[in-house]
Amino acid sequence: MTTNIKERKFLYLVRTKKDKQAFGNLYDLYVEKIYRFVYFKINNKEEAEDITSEVFLKTWNYLMENDKKELSSFSGLIYRIARNSIVDHYRKKAKKQEVFLEEGVERLSSSSDKEAVEDSYDMENLMVLIKKLKQDYQEVLILKYVEELSTAEISEIVGKSNVSIRVILHRAMNKLKELSDQQ
Image 1 (cartoon, rainbow, N blue to C red):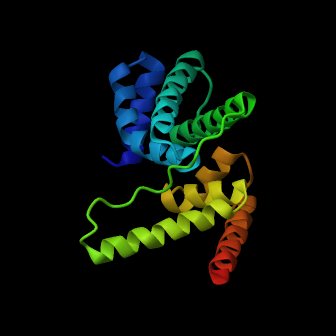
Image 2: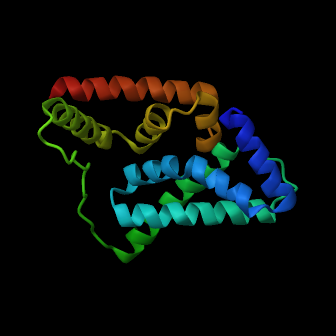
């Protein structure tokens, strides 16, 4: 059974029978993706774990409260909730006026493998360049190339048209290339 069909089946069971096991299966399908998405934005392991848990709790609550409301895709819903949770996180931080140092991108544990270290270095440089882009560009690049979502899914998550998403992707890639050439 393909992932999309499984996802729809689990979502149906959650919405019609409030099946916790089916939601657990949806959790298993998305937990790594949502954590990676949140971690990239937050750069703090503990906070990313907390926010990821919060996202799934909010998703469960949304599904329980809105069981009659049509839902076009679970991935669109959960990424939208994750995105909003990240925004809420930064709003709370701004109110508290706390300053956190970035933990940065984790290095590979085995430094003996020269190729792995080079890949890690290249990835770290890429992450630094992406962090220099404006927020819209960062988000769309992550959703497209890290999370491997379609333009339609990104459009639903971000709340912009497919054409706008393609334009943002094009501009983000051009800006990323420009920043890379400056190094």
